[in-house]
Image (cartoon, helix red, strand yellow):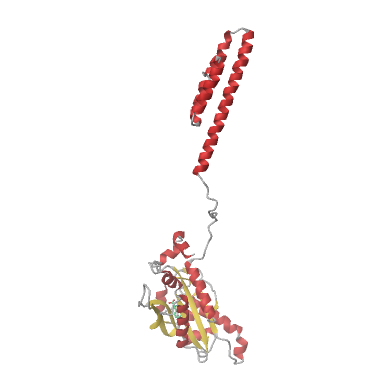
Length: 345
Ligand code: PHE
């Protein structure tokens, strides 16, 4: 074996011994680098005769090509190894479901409102929607709560320009809806004919200056109104019984009326429910206000209180949502934390 064959062989051995790309580059420098063995041989040619230069040069070049070929193939082998190792490490389970873009969902309180609409809908209640920025007239005066009425102080709210305010309850919808209903049937009324009953709920956002674990400055109410010629408290209790048993999916639930006061109902009652089992067993929980619509309010509907009578109620959908899902802090609903909210999907 001549010196060039030996060199090619030891290069091939050095390359084979390199186990990482960095080792391989170091080995390459020893043979092909600026002060590598092959470079030294080329430098040594300066002293040769022109003929010898030719043959020696060709031989060295051939050796160089062999070394380079060995280097290239070792580089490729190391790269292949690395890829194979990476593939083994990052093994892919193609049977896993793909990652989809996160789907949105309804807010728990919206779920409650939908549920309320469906249940009251099944009892023949229409669903009405109205402005959250209200006039003083609809929010208070039409509801038998004139400017100097002490009940107004319990409804501290946010006033905006032009005598408007953020509604403190959904009760203004009683008047807005009834007035429309009466207008639609004005001709029949004028002829002294009987008009269809008013049966409506009006869910939506309401506002008060109030903020703690069970009160939020923005909260929800669901107003209810049923006006006819002989609608009474028995009907009201039946509607509540039907509603709450459906809503909480249990018949083991009691309802009681507790005497109360609202300027727009007379008599008035708070509505409490109590579960016969479960974690809240036997505790009376306040879920809304109600009462027989005050004659002055019936007059503002455009109806004769001697002929038309009925009840109104206001339920708290936030409270109902807390009870249904066992949530104890109302503020969780309004912090926008998806870890909390996505549990309801
Ligand atoms: N609007 C009353 C409130 O916000 C509740 C209510 C509605 C009471 C209808 C009676 C009738 O407290």
